[in-house]
Length: 337
Image (cartoon, rainbow, N blue to C red; front, side):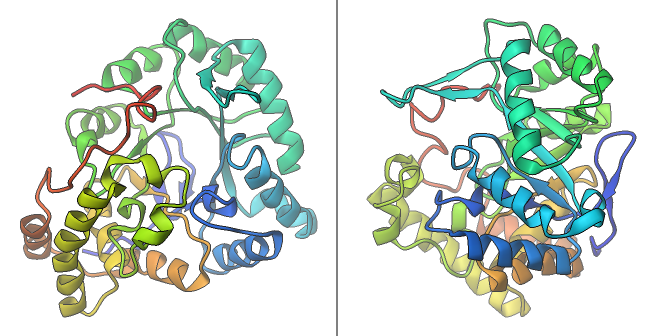
């Protein structure tokens, strides 16, 4: 099987490239990225035919959106037809303490949406996600607020990030949910315990972030020296020294298998993920043009049941050492299994 045909995002489309681009990498989240690097990688995204870009108002405090907007502005009149753009709102951070909170009120969401429209330089957002649920506000009420934004012409479709299958079902009774975003990869398979199935039942795309395991499922995992310096990884259980070393040892076997097949490890990781359902759309991110080539090659890899079975023998469900989030990082995502 090959996965080089477009996939539909939600029941009514549009048809997009099976691999999207996660634009958190246009900030300093996994290492430094300047305006010139961002411009180069977005040109490469365009050249490779990737037409789905995923960003957020909090990625670099608006930096990711601004860099996309600046890139689009250089494209002239054709800018509105280049990309399917998804962005998010709802995460707030206290400027003094740095403590995160979540705001799903209609007023806050619309204020943030308007700021995103300005930064991106577009008239309407193709897909607008609730980045994290505020449990104090029923998801039905939040969905009704998003429907108002559609009626105003500010957004075209609705999504939620890191929600449970039961929440998706509730929201879908108010309006079709085009996409749910969740971490999904060979190292994080919890979506298979209900979310993959519910998305398929409802015609909702499952947009998979961190699909190469935050570098573990690539030929060049982040070094431990780098891991110790990054805000996210230095406190993440999978990157604590003892767990990190075990995860490198286990994924070395996967790298060997990819090499035996004559493909890049990241490419094989994404090909496996694409095989899990036609409604699944991975959104890897990178600051490297070379790595982006590897990621996109996944849609052209011939993969069969024998290869899938061998991959899952090497990295079976539950292989990873450490939880995917620390206690602080788990505040916000809905646990459902």
